[in-house]
Length: 288
Length: 311
Picture 1 (cartoon, helix red, strand yellow):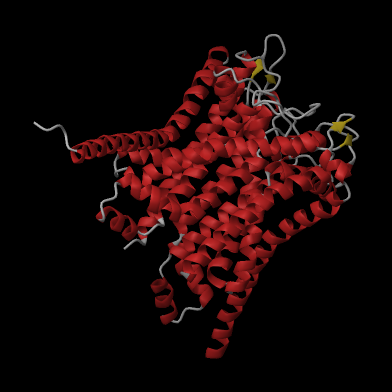
Picture 2: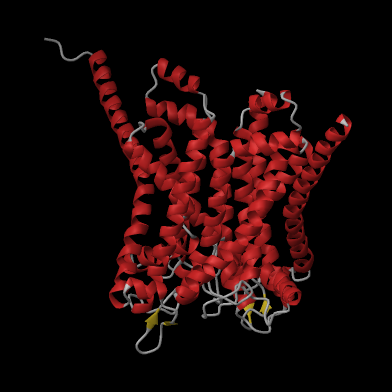
C-alpha cells in the first residue's frame, strides 16, 4: 500500500519532468532547424562574386558587397556614439550618483528605453535626426538612431561591469591619495573593460540585425556604389533581405538564403566573440 | 631682497599644473554627468516627439473615432483614419505568441533551473542565446518561406500569411527573455526553502510545483510581461508574415496588419507633417504607451521579487 503511494508520486514526477524536457526540446529544435536550414540553403549562393560585387538587375544578379559594407559602417557608427556615452553614464551611475530621485529616474529611463519598440526608434530618428537636424535620409541619421537604441544596452552592461569591480580596489586607491577620477581611470575601468567590451560587441551585433529603424531613416534597396560620406544613403544586409524576400517578384530563392546566411554569420559571429571575451575574462579572474 | 628661489617657482608651477589637472578632472566629471542625463533626454525626446506629432492627428480624427474606427483610407479624399483592425491584429498575434511561449518558456526555465544537469544546461543556454541573437528580419524570412506553407496546408487556408503564422514566429522570439527572466527568478528562491520541502518528504517535482514556482511567481509574471512587450513591439516579422490585410481580423487565421507593421509600411510614403504622417505617429504613441506600461509593471514586479529574498 505504502509502496503504491510512493510510486504514484514518483510517476507524477516522472511525467512532469518529461514534460519539462519536451518543452526544452521544443525550444531548441526550431533554433537548430532555422540555423541549419539557412547554412545549407545559403551555402549555394555564396561565391566570391556574391560577396565582392554590387547588385545588378534589381538585385537578381551580382553580389551584395554594398549591403555588407553598409552594415559594417552602421555597426561602427552605432558603437562610436553609444559606447563612450554608455560607459560615461555607467560611471556616473556607479561612482558618482547618490540614491535620490534623479538617479532613480535615470535608471527608470534606461529600463524603458530598452523596451521601446524598434519602429518607434525609427519614428524618433525620422523626426529628430532626419528632419529636425537636417541630416537627411543618411548613414549618419541611421547610426544615431541605432545608437539611441543601443544606449540602454551599453549603459546597463557598463554599469554591471563597473559594479563587479570589488570596493577594496577603490578604497585602496583613494587611501593612497588618488582622486576619484584617477581611481576610475586607472583602476576601475581597466578591471571593468572585458565586461564593457562584451556589452559593446553585443550591441554591435544587435545593430547589425536591426531593420525597422533603418527602413524609416535611410536604408536604400539599390545603390550603384558604396556610401562616400555619412550623409549618403546606404544599403544594409537586413533591409536587403527584407526587400529581396518580400518585395521583388521572381527573386531566386538561393539569393534570399544567401543574404540571410551572410546576415546570420555577421550577427552570430559577434555574439560568439562576446561570449569568448566574457569566458576569457572569467578564466583570468579565476586563475589569478 | 633676493628674488624668488627656484624652489618657490617649482611649487608655484606644480600648483598651476595641479589646478589645471583638477580643472580637467572637473570637466571630465561634468561630461560624465551629462552622459547620465542623456538617457533621460532621449526618453523624453521620444515622448515629446510622439506627443507633438501624434496628438495633432487627433485634431483631424477625434481619439474615439481613431481608436474605434474600422476604416483606414490614408490617401482617399478626404482621408479616414481608424485603427481598430490594427489594434485587434496586434491583440491576436500577441495572444497567439503568449499562449505558446509562456507555458513552454516557463517549463523550459523550470527544467534548466531545477532539474537539468550542469552539462545539459551548458549546452542548452548557448542555443537559447543564439535564438535571442537571430535578427527579426531573419525570423520574418523563415516565417515567409518555411512556416507559412506549413500553416496554410495544416489549416487549409487561402494563404499561410496570417496572424497565426506571425504569432508562432513571435512566440519563438519572446522565448529567450521569458526563459532567462523566469530562470533567474527560480534561482533566486533560497535553497533553504527546497531543503525544508525535502525534509517534509516532498519529491523534487512537488518542491518545484509547490515551493519554487510559487516563490518565483512575481519574477515569472515579470518574464511574461516582458515577453508580451516584446511581441507587441516586434515589427519586421509581423510586417512580413501577418498578411497585411486591412479588414478587422475575426480569427487568428485571417491575414492581418498589426500596429507596428502599419507604421513600417506607411511611413515611407507619408508626406512629412501630413495627416497620414501624424496618424502613424499617433499609432507610435499608442504602442509606446502600451510598452511603457508593460515595462514599468515588469520592473516594479522584478524589484519586489529582488527584495523578497534579500537579506
